[in-house]
Amino acid sequence: MIRNILKSLCAVALISGMLTSCDDFIDVDPQGVISEDLAMSQPDAMVTSAYAKLGDDWYTYPFNLWPYGDLTSDDALKGGSGTTDTNYHPFEVWSTLTASTPDHMDEMWYHLYCSVSRCNRALVSLAEYGDNALGAELKAVREGEVRFLRAHFYFKLVQIWNQVPWVDEEVYKNHTEEQTPNNVFTHEELMEKIVADFKAAYDVLPETQKEGGRANKIAAAAYLAKCYLTMAWGNGYEDATGVSHINQQYMQEVLKYTDVVAKSHYGYLEDFGDIFLPEYKNSKESIFAVQHSDYQDDNTLYGRANWSNMLNGCWGMWSCGWDFHKPSQNLVNAFKTKDGLPMFNDYNDQIDYPVNGVPTAQKWDPRLFHTVGMPTFPYKYEEAFTMTKDNSRTPNTYGYYASLKEVPQRSQGETFDNPWQAFAMNDYVLRYTDVMLMRAEALIETGSLEEARTIINDVRQRAKNSVSKHISYAADQCEIALYPASYFQTKESARQCLQWERRLELAMENGRFFDLRRWGIASKTLNAFFEKEQNSVYDGQAYAQYYKDAHFTSGKNEYFPLPYIQLFYVPGLYTQNKNY
Image 1 (cartoon, rainbow, N blue to C red):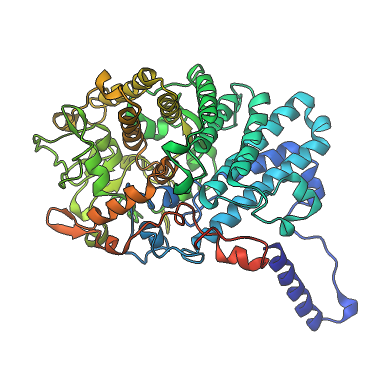
Image 2: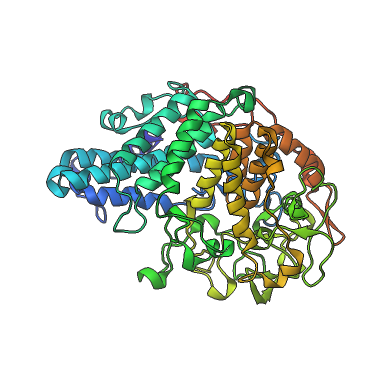
């Protein structure tokens, strides 16, 4: 990309030369920009610049990865006006995914590496000017924060593309970005580099920061646990991933770092519904989150809105609700309970959905009503904004369900509403319950089944307690029970409980596909999902029939193809992921 920018600048210079004589070149400083030397001499401002990239995204390159982690899974359909609305449809079906389709992948790659570049510049600035400008102690903390941020961005790059070029501050200083291939390091080696950054952050960061939004020691511990859990199952490709490939040493690291989180000041927020309301966005549940604001909060014209989720408001409910990120029927069915426990084997045998005020023998996990917007039910708890079937943009393609977690209550209004819509909702990167479920997963794989059951039952107890405050209208449709000891007598049955709990607790939070890949069950799960979901019907309306063309190919689709444009910029520098 740098090479193309230089070519463009040369072209501009050439054209300018045609229009003026060689003696008439004007040498003036550019206006409205800060010089690089001046910027680099202000290390704290460079750190702030790196932080700013956390929320500097857009729906075509959302850093929360909702198209990559949800639309690719059995949790969500794309939504919108049809399969051609945005270029994300190949993520739904996998069979048409190529290096150039969707082209949004190139934007994601570019902007994530812009984020890495900000971090590298901040590290160079801190190394040169940090001692004088900040003092040794604060300099060390800021370096830890920046290494945390760089590891955060690199974790996303590896999540999506597996083998990517490692561009650190040394590469930046030597200007060798365009000589850095993507196949120097294996998947595990890249993950070890990310771990090294998080460990460097963990070693120097305080447990709490005076300023909200900054990374701290507990966030670094949580991310280390996430990295080690990812590595513990294998490299992501199904022939080298799964139960038979578990690395027990890495699982012990998960236990080590989740223990730090468990003993910290973070904890379970008392009501599940509160987790996804703006007024609780920096509660004890939130270990690390991308901060967003309303213009009334920060006295700016539009606020620091969350543009990544701008498409995901319910149709007809918001001024610009574009109705993307639609829960699947399979996900709704997964919330079914019998005697309060999941229906592991027959949950998807038939289509069911609750109707407000019409309880039946079929009962549901309460988290359904906090996660999925459904006709006849209040939208995000507000009866004045009850959903109807008119709140779906293309029901014959994407059905009638809506996503609830990433939006505020309708009465609170949008942060920005013309011609696009945005909300001041934080993006959770790590929340406490997610980390505790990581711990339960590691406990199961290391043989501590009863301790894992305690964690999972704590999560279910919180769900059980999350009815009266927000969803009392659904109380007669909810039933949830704690797991008896009999469900945790073997690793196999305990693993099933854990994997189910992660799905229900974290549904529509942008990580389902990455869980399926980590466990080595993506192809089995998704191809079964495609076979059944194409027959979805809600109140006589058939939809999701496009899944007849869907197929997930193991040995290929575990990772996304490197964008063609990136391969084209420096031909031969990057190696494409296998089988694309």
